[in-house]
Length: 487
Image (cartoon, rainbow, N blue to C red; front, side, top):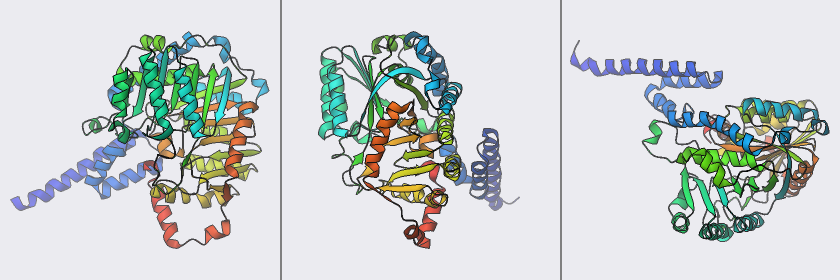
């Protein structure tokens, strides 16, 4: 064989090997058929680029150590629950709820291991500046411990009063731990505030650090998207809001101020939220579990209030598709009305079919989304789903009061979902999220009032006008729809 033929032969052999290796991994991983066929096609047509793309984003790789630690956390969560949730607090009076509520509870227990707890009190906040001030008051009132995790912390405005409150708490001896996503808050990490917190005695850690070496053992686009605060093991916060003042955050994005909601909680639900946060801290620090539980102040809780709430965490290596299954079950339980708010509408096939099925069986389905979002790619990908929803009678409402960032679902004024999870594939498959499933009319009434306030600042999408958009726009929407899992 002449030497000038060697490079082509090497390329062909490498091509075949890459296709075989990628094909074997895809087959053994058993993704949905459409995804599997897409990767097989890409590997066959563009083996080198396709192989590299698959290694970077084809699997939800989290690294062996993180997988091992996550597996051990499942056992640790049971220890926390046994230590801090009396058995009676999981014995919910299901007869006072919709029939589907008990099935949802059973599903959450089965797929995630998280039971509904009874006896929680809530206060729903719709004003972000009021949220920041209330969080600062809770931190100022802390006696022993503050735990906090967020996807983004942005310097400036009213958000800085939370920083000042943490510094004061640490200086008076309160154990303060703050976990902030490494990528979501990258500008903040480059600023002065993290060092100010550390100098005051606050323990500040990056969640899911990024880097070239880390990309070899796990995907670097898997992010901590949760927003949880626990103070003294007695008060908790969660919802859609990052630690930002809307007037200072992405002010030049051209979408208006971000519009969020948070819930302040007392009673039994504080423990499951605390356990989720403690688990995230443990994964990044390796701190002993018992030390964490003790210093965080998680103790036997007393029921407070009437709300029965189930906290469902999700993320790669944590609960599989449990949160997706809970959302599908909640949507399928709707008999009369379903109202959904989300900033990013890029669902997978199962979710879009669930919404279409609900509308098809006579449920009044309303989806509220912002008119504009901060990502042009996501905006067009979202629009590719509008026809699917309009065709079956779903009412699409476009919010004009800013970038509506609240994530919520209300079903029949009886069951609710409220949390950090967007209605998109990134949120469901790649991010670490938390969602509250709340059973009963008390929270539902508060959520309905919030959603009605959003509707008052929304206009329905006009079907006739929508159908007149150009072929170019339709094509762009459908092309970007293919990239839904990455947006």
